Image (cartoon, rainbow, N blue to C red; front, side):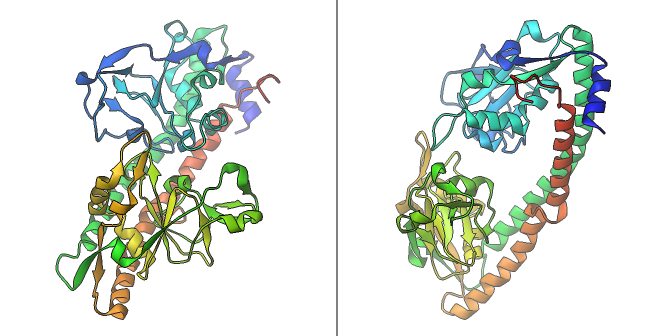
Length: 419
């Protein structure tokens, strides 16, 4: 499918007008009482799923009396950390928190802008990159509401509303066919992840057997990182782990770092050693706070000051897996300060216990830890690895979808919009 050929055929001589989002849409002007909402109709930034994953039911309800209302067809955007790419096209009515933007097509524009077409535009990587470029705040960036309304979107055949909607509908139809395939695979993967979580938690509960539950403070020590910023990043330098990457780019363990900073910062940084477990001390949700990744790289890695390196003598992946269990997360929740930014209370966190099998026989203990890790690694690969199994198939489908979305939305741009 040629981009130019397909677009010319689709437009059939019609023009394309690029408009600011604010010319065709607005932020929801309506409000709803919190008492009218439940887990299925309240949308906070926590229950919008990253990487364009839609929404899940809320695990808590709002603590304010009135909220912004949303309607079917509105586009809901998570406005904290736009790089997380949280977006959902509403299929029901409800209310959303202040950290969620409800974008609604203006009544007078609904005759030539399709809601599903607008969702395609606002779920593109190009839009999220734009939002991040104009975001405010470094520690917890937020999209700038005024700038978002200045984002330029294409309207095909604006002089003919019927033809414009037909073109938009055809683009949506093609993309929906790809999205449906991905949705089926994702549903199957979700079921497998639940199964994996069940067996992981069961395996690490150690119901019976020779095991002692020990507080983290008895097992090791916590070493806080040192600050570095985006301005310090370079293509080739000292390997670092930024706390924000632990939410989005790392799994249970890591063997290499995704980022580097300047070599001349070496003395000012603090490092995790191979075998340490790196945890975050801030996050958007309780699950994010204290999220763990075992560092298995060949050498040390510098860590951000919103991270701690947990230094110990156990199997690092075993410790990291323990920190993913539902029981550990429930305990962790007791030691999270719920302020503007959820923050880990490390003195309390260090009191949480994890199982130590065969505590009186170090060799046997490490052998048992390794045996459990080997089992969990297989589950983890099947449910998270993008090099095999369903995750790989889903990743390929997503890339296929994104390729065709970019192709189908490649309307000719005037120079002032950016060709």
